[in-house]
Amino acid sequence: MIRQPIVTIMGHVDHGKTSLLDSIRGSAITAKEAGGITQAIGASIIPLSTIKKVCGGLLDKLKFTITLPGLLFIDTPGHAAFMSLRKRGGSLADIAILVIDINDGIMPQTRESIDILRHAKTPFIIAANKVDMIEGWSRKKDLLVDDLNAQDPSVVQRFETKLYEIVGQLYELGLQADRFDRVGDYTKQVAIVPTSAKTGEGIPELLMVMTGLAQRFLEDSLKVEVSGPAKGTILEVKEQKGLGTVLDVIIYDGSLKVNDKILIATQDGVVESKVKALLEPAKHEEMREKKAKFVHVDSVRAATGVRIIAPKSEGALAGTPLLMIDGNAEEARKALESELKEVLIETDKDGLIVKADSLGSLEALMTMLKESGISVRKSSIGPITKKDVADAEAILKKDALHGVILGFNIPKPDIQTSALILCDDIIYRLIEEYEKWRDEQRRKTELSELENITAPCKIEILKGYVFRQSNPAIVGVEVIYGALKSNTPLMNKKGDQVAFVKGIRLEKEAVDKAERGKQVSVSLQGVTIGRQVNEGDVLYSAISEDEFRKYKEFRDHLTEDQKLVLKEIAEIMREKKALWGV
Image 1: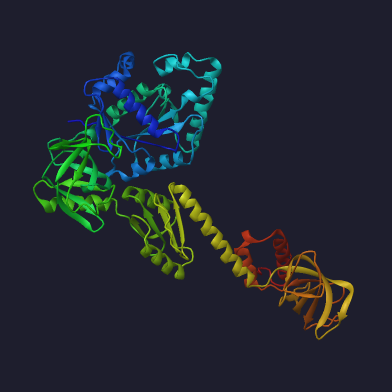
Image 2: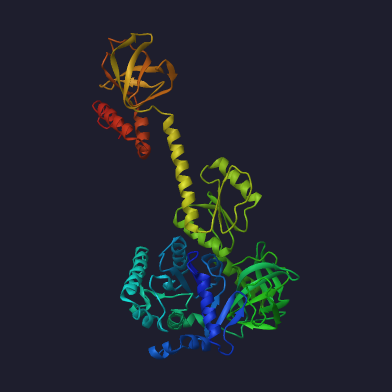
C-alpha cells in the first residue's frame, strides 16, 4: 500500500516554521472532518479527507484527484530536527517545506537549510510566509491567487517586488524558482507558495502543491508493507518520570506490536531489546506539552509516530534506525549495522574534534567540513566532555591549528582549557568562525617567521651628521622606506655589503627599530665614513636570496613600503645575477 509522505518544515529562526505548522494543523482541525487530524509522537497525520476539506473548491477548479492517503508532518520543525532524521538510503523526510519570510528574504539558516536539503537530495517547496505583513495587504478572497488579484495595484507591486527578490536570491544560490502557478517544469524549478500562517492564506495551495508533487514524483518510494516488520527512526531519546528512558520513534515501514523484539543502535553498539509498551497521546492532547497524557496501544503501523518503552534503550542514539526482528535475529542485526555503515563518520589521521547533538546533525556538519577542506580527527554525538578537551589539548601540542573542538547544536562547556572551543547552531557560521580563527593563526605564524629574517629597508646617510667615522662609525640616517632594525646588514646601490647596524638611537634612547620617516643615529660596524660610504649615500638592507624568496611566499602580508624596497633590492641584485630570487 501507499503510505503518507513524511514532511518536515525548515527555515530561518522567526520566519514562522512553527506558526505555519500550527496553521496547517489548525486548518485541519477547523475542517471538522470526522477523524480529522491525528496526533502522534513527533508527528501530525492529516488524512486525505481532511486535505480535501481544507483545499475545498481548489481541487475541483484544477480538476486534481488525490490518491495519497494523506500527509504526515514532523512536529519538530527546524533544520536540526531534519538532520537527525534518517532511514536507509538517506533522510527520513520524503519532502520538505522551506519557510522564508517574504519581507526578510533569504537569511543564514535559510541558506543552511538549502544546503542540507541538497545534500540529502530531498525535494522541497518554499512557503513565502507572512504575506499579511506586506503594507496594505488585506484578505479578500478564499483562494490565494484570487486574493492577490483583488489587492490594490500598489500592494500587488510590493508583493511582486518582494517575491522576485527571493527568486533572485535563490538564483544566486543556483536554484531556479517561481510562484507555484507560474512553474512550467517542477523537475527544474522550485515552487514558491505565498502563505500567511496568521490568516491561513495559501494553506490550501501549499497542501495541494505538496500532495501533488509527492503523488507525481514520490509514489514508488512511498510503497510499504504494512504487515511486514517495522522499520523506524529514533527521533528523540528522553527520560519520562515514572517510565525511565523512552524513545520517540517515526515508523516509516511495517507494523510494530507490544512484545516485538527490536534492535537499537547505542553508543556501545547494536543492542537487542523488547517492546514493553507503545504509547500515543490521548485524544485532544497536545503531545508537545510536558503534562500531555498518553494511552497504551497494542500496535502501530506505518507511517506514524509512537513512544516506545524498551529495556536497554538508555544509550540509544537520536537519528539512528530502529529495526524489528522478524525471524533471524542475526540477519536483522546485520541489516541494522549495514544501515549504520551508511552514516558512519569517516575521520582523518589529523584534524579537529567535532561534536553534535545527533547522528544526522553530525553527518551534515562532517559533509560541509569536508567540502571546506577541513579535516576531522574525532567525531561523536553528545555534549563536549573533559575527555574531548584533554584530547584537543594533546592535539594542540603537536598541531596549533587542530587543537580545536567544534560543537553543533550543543552548549559550550564551562571548562578552562588552552584548546579552542567553538559552538553554534548554524553550521556554516561555525565553519566560518573556525576558518577566520585558523587564517588569523596562520597569519601570526607567517608574520613570526618574517620577524626572524632581515627586514627590508632603504635609508639615507644625512649630510652633516657624521658623529664618528669608524670603530664603529656613528651617523645620522633617515629611513626612506621600510623599517631599520638592529643587527641589519647593509649594502650599497651596487649590491655590495658595506656595513652592519650595531645599534639605533632615537632622541638619545636606544631602540630596536625605526620606521619610515624617522631620523635616528646608528652605529655601523665594518665601515669608515668617507671610504666605503659617504654622506648622502643611499643604503639598503642586505637581504639574502633565500630571505627574498620567503618574502615572496608571504607577499600578502607585506606593506606597500616593504614591497617597494624589495623590488628595488631585486633590481640591484639582478644586475649581478639575472635570475636572483626567482
